[in-house]
Length: 388
Image 1 (spheres, rainbow, N blue to C red):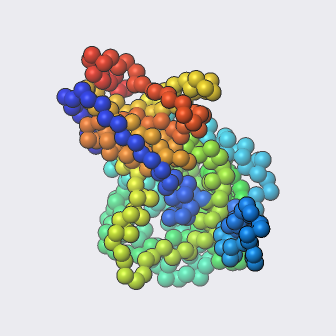
Image 2: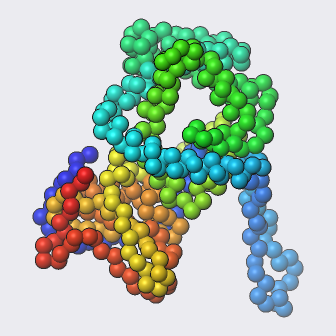
């Protein structure tokens, strides 16, 4: 991505994005099944009887209930919400700035190599759990991969085994407990580690105990360092998720529980594929490509006269004079959702400055409110302040 593109134009363009219904939470639940438990079914669709004298026979539509997959119970929700509040603050005020500095010092290829090195170190855990599950072929495959990557991949910095097509056999204690028939009882939000359950929480202790470096100082710090390295590339998306959802805990609990109890869902497409339909469905995967892009924007606000509340908006300004495109998320969407950020990045890469307002839920119908970019003088065009 190349920032600082200049465009010698003084016109202002308006671009309205309406009805973006593919929110990040829906994407995770419906398409990926991995971030998103109540067991109650949705209500049936029933017509309203506005004039009963003209209606005869059954006054309800045929049963068309939508039943959500059964997930985990959450009897300690107050505690879990408190832990999630701590995690959000930890992500936003500590991990995010530290990761931004880390990414500026350690280039992406080096971060990827560190992640592969850490993955190679956890081989004993995978070996033990493959054996405990009776997966003899899996234990042999992981042994071959570890030997190959350690010897030829410089200790795992390079994943030679994958390049050579050697199969993987992922395994941990949570998976082993599942194999043994131990069922999870309730949802559990762990500090720093995030969503889990009491079964996998115990499994996490077992995974740590199965790694030899745990027992030798200072090598016991290697695992934490690798985890921080890996999370540095995903923290921006996590922070955006917490800000773009009005109740991020509820969505995360539902999404994780759904994915957790339906791990073996087959998402493959069979039969003849309709290209037009597939191209349309690909819209749910549309997002920004540069992990640094959300952090490059500036957040400001305008005062809504009718409510007295402030309405936040985000800016991505070019370093020189450039046309401006305003993005207005549709009903239920948010300016920090992946779809909206993807559009803003696309515009920025093509030489536009872009601004996004969040869903205008605090604006009364019929009220006209205009936002503005800072430090803009009509006679001088749009001069963007330099990025920090």
